[in-house]
Length: 177
Ligand SMILES: Cc1cc2nc3c(=O)[nH]c(=O)nc-3n(C[C@H](O)[C@H](O)[C@H](O)COP(=O)(O)O)c2cc1C
Image (cartoon, rainbow, N blue to C red):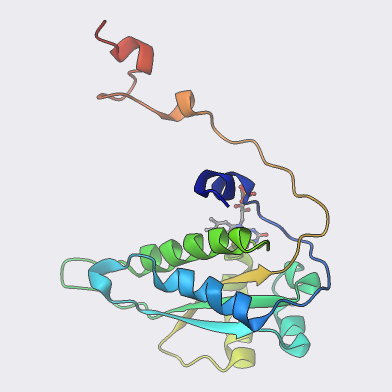
């Protein structure tokens, strides 16, 4: 797909068809995460690809999204300062996540950034997924073919959130002509 078509087609999808997702597809989505920027290139991220229905059922304890998802990718991060000058791990995992959501769409699949619900159940999921204590389970991305068509929620319009040169200057006010 053309880049902006992918950006505009991406939606948070929470209901999936039962059709399985090939490991090649899931690995391509992870590969898109690997290409994301990270503070000082520390790449403190790791991923667990889940396609075992028993493990997906445990993920569904945290979110109903995993009741229908045929696969998921668990996003792990080592919450460590990248340098003395900054701690960037939340940004790092977020950059990888967005790359992966877009990659899923480009490959003909749907996903959703599930984070709030995961963090509430992190202790349970840590046991189920055997995640070592130095890593946080930050979010989980379901992956599958969409069942139905998620609606585009209301979004800000460019003129509501874009300023030229100084805050409050619209395109027309900033025009020199
Ligand atoms: C940091 C973050 C946490 C999120 N956590 C959840 C979540 O726990 N469960 C969920 O269903 N959606 C979650 N979402 C998805 C948002 O609800 C969704 O992106 C938003 O409603 C806009 O819809 P859209 O993605 O279709 O544009 C999360 C998104 C972000 C960026």
